[in-house]
Length: 325
Image (tube, rainbow, N blue to C red; front, side, top):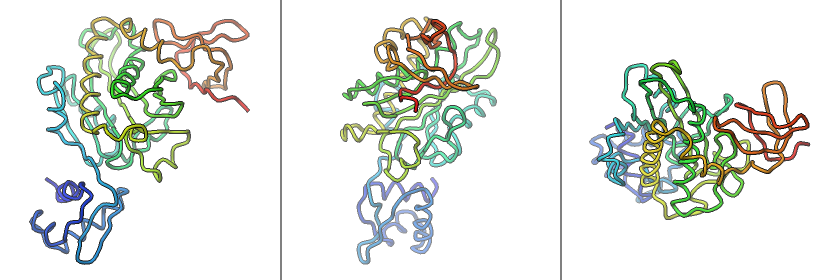
């Protein structure tokens, strides 16, 4: 295991550890320990150094733990999970999973990261990804005999499934903003980004990226361009590893159901969670914006918008629930 990863796992408890003890546990010199400690601010971690007491992180961390995730639910026995990899710091979980897919990885391959340098949101935006704070998850799903007709609804399936997991942990006020924003009390909690490769009528695959704010540092949240919240602001009793395990399992089961039955089993939950329906919204499209009353979605997941020209159907765009100025 990399020395910095080992060091982080020791310091994650938020307690003081002397340089001598750290060096002994890592099998390196105290000066080597100090060199590693000096790199931690580069990934956004604040290290406190106190004479005769040692070093500690300013706040404890719950780092992702492969064994805890695999044993936290029934994942260990699930045939849908083909591989689970966890990275300390990568450019993008989606980018890595697209690479894995091209290399032949099996359906159900899941990638997690403590931090992303180039996390991707919709429409080319950056997904703010501070170290050890949130859930950055991507997984591969293959369709060997061609994609279902309702493939365009798969981002809605991922969103609904993630929202239900959050609700099942006791949080209320969860909703969906078409097509794939997860909100809690009107603030951004998570989002979905899907990437597709292959042929609709032949073998193809989807890489689904899910980001959920678990414990967003205030200083990192400043970079987010909209009101946001995180799970720990509403409950401090939810384990990051247990939440992640539950989310992985729910997503794999949901995609398996979708492959067999399409979007229909998920429609009722979408309608229940839909924050746009009945609201006057602004839809940003490629050549401008359209204002109308949201009338829900159709069977293909397209937004139905009642405008002066009647009810129009949109398969892409970005909805704002805020009033235009």
